[in-house]
Image (tube, rainbow, N blue to C red; front, side, top):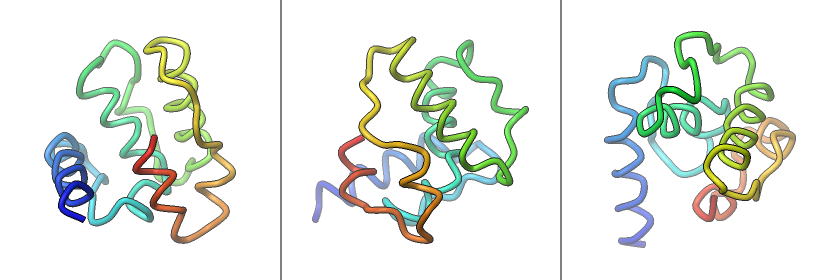
Length: 98
């Protein structure tokens, strides 16, 4: 569990300056897609216009993050936006793996 805490803390630190992104866990904190987008933006701000995103567009935020990661960063999409938005608490193992 120490590794999961370390990953959560890394995500929390990476997203600390992003409004609306509060990493409390490796499940529901990623549901709206903002955390995924913030992590990409933190390292490659040219790929995502974070200021244009809204918490109300969870499906689109996740889709943007997954497509950007796959097309621009070579990270295969391991999750589908529907998986995240269909549950109040998405599968933490899927989020951790991604």
